[in-house]
Length: 258
Image (cartoon, rainbow, N blue to C red; front, top):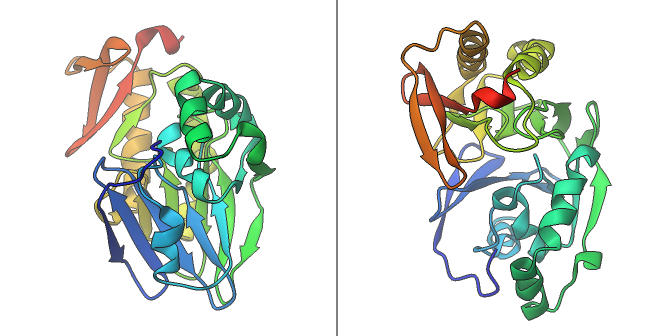
């Protein structure tokens, strides 16, 4: 999150209705433009004025939906103040907003935590954008309140960090991989409704088969098939990473898998 957004960004049109907005930190969000309304799926880290970016493409009223409560997906809400989020991720949002550094940034932009409104987004919720329907699908795992957004007509699934090529499952608040596998099983029906996955740190569209690949990788860890796993160094210490497909890993902590 940045009080003076200076980062360059790219906007890539994915099809007639959808644009990927990507900043210099490999964060992405997505603009969906219907005939009546538009939607932003996530807002990145706050280094880019995503409202300005979206309004360069469409003049339709904008709705923001956050796939989960991590800062690299919600801090760009600074430019909107109002969004839809699963209630189970509100505690982490409130904790982040109370941090002194974030307080200083908000103060520099003339806002406070009380200026942000989060409406509850739950599985089955529908957003009519005019000729396009966006459906909320719950997929907790990376966070307790993780959601995906299915753009029905274009058969696209926007997954945030719930499904991606470099999944972090070592963080406080992550479900165990056994629990996450069960949540994945519950959404496998979406393979009949979507052809493409657009995740929160992508450079393009991924085939829906990534969902199967990830489910297999989770099952391997749960079954103890981890002989090829290696150390993964991150700002919280050292854990493990499990390769499950080409250029794809699941990062996890054995202490969280009990």
